[in-house]
Length: 116
Image: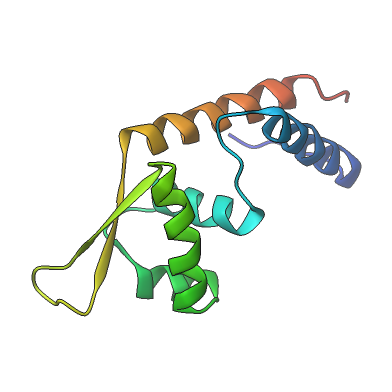
């Protein structure tokens, strides 16, 4: 599916989705946390702290801090890799999957309201 948006339309969509998320009492994530969450849920697992840091171009401590917050919200979970105890595996949760699905629904709904 291909969608063409002009810059102003794209920014309006981003603004409208952001406003909806700001008003949402369930999940309040930073842009960095949102990027990490979407990477975990949109890219094929497995995910590690090291791999996420490399993919997003940030340090492992940045990923760890974000995962700490998202873990408290039950959006992701972590466990040590049984094969290599140095690796931390980041796993999806049901609550996280539902949050990402809700985000997708919000984006679609807001996109449908854009004027041509």
